[in-house]
Image 1 (cartoon, rainbow, N blue to C red):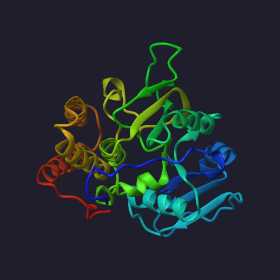
Image 2 (image 1 turned 30 degrees about the horizontal axis):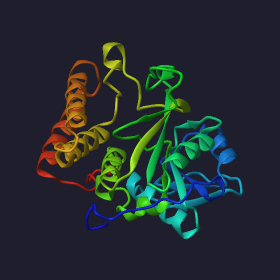
Image 3 (image 1 turned 90 degrees about the horizontal axis):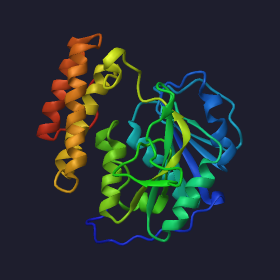
Length: 297
């Protein structure tokens, strides 16, 4: 990781022929191939980083695919960094990162390249608005049809387009986070090194945020496993501790979200006992600064 935020980065002009996609896999379902079609249609090279213990079932992939098999769960941050390193080693100057449960829509790569071109040679991370698969509408409302791009404090991992050398130069994704808040922490750190954080106003992806809850709990409750609850709470607190003075409003929103999700566990979710224990352990470890993979991974 670079030693300070005084380093000035420049980004190469984005080009489709020098852009690759990175998709992290973990126990993918049978719908994966269908969801990946648009990614293969738009990118010359697609890096599939498989964190499935023992490996996912063998599949025949298009020639554009490059598969990295870890044979165990190293965490999403390690997998994303492997994708960055592949891009740099193979002369891909830009990469886009995706979750395995995201479905890309046509026109994505053309649009993010257009947005990134406006910022070059300054570094930029370009995400895309997405259709919430559970709610059937865009995740972010746009005030006017004339708006085609929005500035955001952070982006989700899936659908984010970035210059590879910049991503590696600022230290890559935090591997001690393992999973959850990896994307938020990376974006906030990128901002410290001068990157713009932008998002297309038009949705270019369908994406599911966890498993939908029920009733009022649908707003906050995503029925995550206890292990995911632990990482969400711990890593959110760690990110807030690091960035509260720089981004106080963002930090307050994150703390409010954690409080709401804790209340949702009590009020609406099944398996309350293990989830609450994981939630409280995550709170404690976030406060004392513990990181790395949970021993139960």
